[in-house]
Image 1 (cartoon, rainbow, N blue to C red):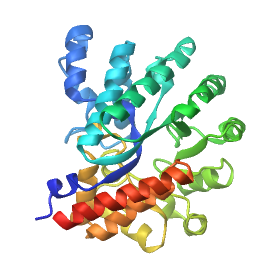
Image 2: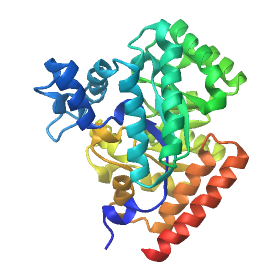
Image 3: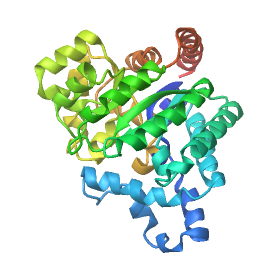
Image 4: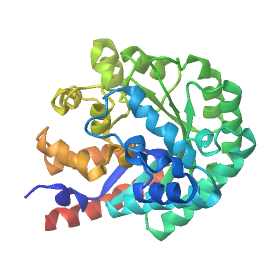
Length: 343
């Protein structure tokens, strides 16, 4: 029988997961009871999207405003990183690209940027070994951040490239804030060796995807679902084969679509777009990547072989170098064949 447990043991790759959206509720509850008692009474409603929540971008982003209050110390931040990797490994991920906001973790203190980056990198390296889960890190920049603050983050990040901080993610409210002011900074970052994913076509229109590809130089697109509003942008994505990081449950619970059956994933696949499947914010959404694979099968009737192809897309679309991609392909193939023979 195909159920969540069926996909839980399938080897998986996740390229679009936010650290801040991956913090265990049990950990938040413990910290709140000890250090943030004012958050205890309605904590669950403040950090998770519940059934009666409004399906809006504002409600979705409000969860992060509460979560930001928890980034109090090195011990807490490193615990959050370690538990995030432990949960990913328990869901049988074999590679994870984890993005984090140094702005949020430092609570907006420019003097702490380098420090919090070192905490995240250190904890990620240790947890990667402990849970046998290869990981790369992406530094998140928000469109609403001051450019000089974002530039300082990029400068701080350079020293951590050799420790797995491979890329940048331009995120934030694309409906209210253009990515164009970041063009020069992103070019500078690219020259320093960073790869780039851009949240586009999520809450903003297809034109933001075109902007991300043609002007900002994105290597991948985060979400990108509203690309279907413009045939020319669909063709651009098809021709360039730019990877699109799809996050199914997130797109529903943030109000982009009213129902999972409205999601354009099947049409995107039919049109030959380069699709990967990801979790986005598993703890806020109360999911893991296995849930997303189950949706692929139950809602969109994708077979295990078709889902495996999407995992292969994710490996090819990762920010790893060619040698490490080849190693990951080999590891995935071995684990998938073993899983498939037993399923």
